[in-house]
Image (cartoon, rainbow, N blue to C red; front, top):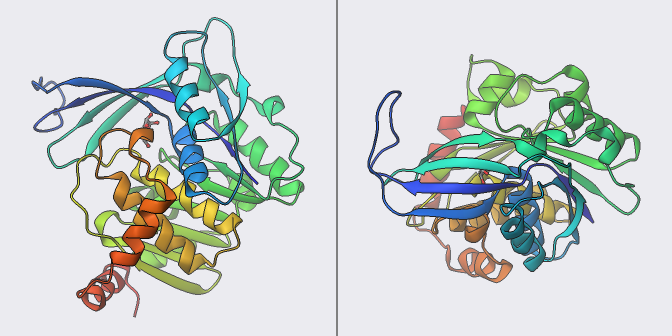
Length: 311
Ligand code: RIB
């Protein structure tokens, strides 16, 4: 059983030809709202992966923005541990998606900022705790330490990027980051492999967009190339990766297999608009894994190895 503790937002999304520069106004297309938030997206991805019961500790306001988030999570079978601080709005995110599917996101945390240490539910029965950094850092640290003490595997997706205390890193078994977050935490010098090695956690995964991902597990490196898909919107792809990765690890899959499943799911999450709306079902991930016998696999693997600075 997996417990996710983190943010839930309503995403306000506009597509535009490009993401505006500071001071620039861009005329975009249709405005849409989607259920989002890194914590909620990851919980939904974990649940949709199947095979493991998923719970989510979240905080929502008592406003109209909360209902679509609750509906999305409930329809995926996520068990909710809900905190409802009075007089605070549901978290919101303002997202511009460009014609290449890349995004720029600004989050107004609202109720997410009210989650604190005392809200953590009893941990009996959970094997994994999955955290991100869209709730207060002292809360994340308290949850990680409590889970470590209770014998859970602690997984931290260190997004959005920021410096982390040694105490928090020492409580994390598996760290998941993108390349920018990796360099924020490990410093900007050396290769991707050097950065992975400098971090103190037992296992670290770095996602590298379309290239794929690289994991260091103890002293062993795993490489997983990306799956080629038509990209519509990359929002939530990293969250899908994290949720599916943890579902697979909680289901006793090997790291190599978990990386493959997570990468395929993250690729599919780029093929539709929105965060939770684009998280694939397990059958679609399985279908992509079956059909993905790529003729250029060896070349893609070699390119990934070279990019990561591995021999
Ligand atoms: O990772 C994507 C998510 O970041 C969006 O759903 C948005 O809510 C922000 O939390």
